[in-house]
Length: 637
Ligand SMILES: *[C@@H]1O[C@H](CO)[C@@H](O)[C@H](O)[C@H]1NC(C)=O
Image 1 (tube, rainbow, N blue to C red):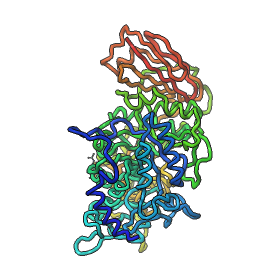
Image 2 (tube, rainbow, N blue to C red):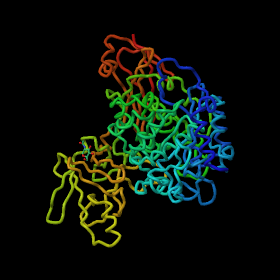
Image 3 (cartoon, protein in one colour):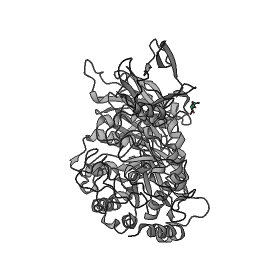
Image 4 (cartoon, rainbow, N blue to C red):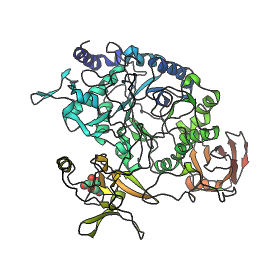
């Protein structure tokens, strides 16, 4: 098939007939535009159960079940996760090169082996049509920028306005003109790289991708390797601009979210509808635990339901790895059940609900068991998730269990740390908190870069001394002019790395680490005049945070929110390894909701997991299982 003819034709189809041919708007809106993503989006995503290997048949079977069983509970998006363009043949895996199906404009198209309806240049349009006919919305995962495969093939760029190859200044622009090889996706370095959005040709390429997705009937894009450690504000900004002009709109989601801070998120939250705030979440207790602090910080920064693209935006705690699953980075479909026990699963669902995270179920629905079904469709949790307000961590709780004595701390509650009890954090350079670095000369040719800290021994790194300049080193020196390698100690060739050697999935890591020194943008740092230390790969700035001593860190947590009928939701989480009695005083509720009079009131309570109900005027108290939670609905008069 002649793709350039198709490209030309589809341009006209899109602009002239798109609303009538592709999708029919569900309502006629007069006056104000409806708010996009007005509540946290809900749906199913193929990643936790199929990794990248899902087929059209498996996908549509799952969509059918979403439509029949989950749609009545608000689950409406069905999303194909990454590498739908990769041929599933021996040798192909998550970071393999050369197995992708790419059109003549360098754009990924579905692998016809796994997505037979895409044959003949149809892309995902047949799948989208079927999904729409089930009353659902269709989503796809996309990576940053352009693939290395298209870059190597130096494909021309489609000019969607002319319907032909993009030309400027009398020449045809190609993939190698716009791809930024030094900004390859850190966790899929043979996969994708950023494109230069300062060039009109780079913008034309991104536009050609997203207009094609719209043409296929895509309602949701999960844009990966552009956020967190991989932040690419330029690409997010431009993609958002393209999406803003589409009708019907496409929901814009960012991933992953390792090292994300509220300050970083504020740069982009208005451009998107949801964004991850942690690395990948899998079915381990450690992963569940890692969401409590960051979620609290985003709630305190008033980011839940803040202004987003054509509506609202939501901090995303990642998919729910419950039910029938596969493993991260696997070449295999689902083959095991979730490793979380029921208490841990309830804790996860309850935190996700109380924090108003998007709820994207990850298990294979063809093997959905009743317990999991009841959990993900629990009406109280879904009511809280969609409609509660004033969601925040509630600090006024106490535990009355016997403290652990002489017990070994659980391994899985210790987060990675470095620099002693400190951890390297990465945040946007616009955050004044990052302006904490200065140089300190030790002797004539030994300099340190130190972090301000009111302690006797503030953390310091060593500037790496210039090496003998071999030919290759000279080239790199030119490229990384003005930047530094920073050593953990003098004499040891271990350099500060903003992105430790990652697993091939976007799995969370400790925030940074030291690795063997090399000329890698992740290891290059620039000390700015204002004291910020900027990483050459991501443009993020380093901070040093004290890591809480594990033994003293709080092992119980609570969240609170108000309901739309005047009720109060109060959740207790027991992060301990033993059953713990957790209590809160009704009077303290007024400390977080000052407009609520709690004096002399009497509250009816109902705890949803135990079914316990009663009336109290003072204390709410309950024994909570290890890693479990309680959720009270309070109606006070
Ligand atoms: C510090 O300087 C850098 C580089 O000039 C700049 O990008 C950043 O916004 C500045 N940060 C603050 C908080 O002023």
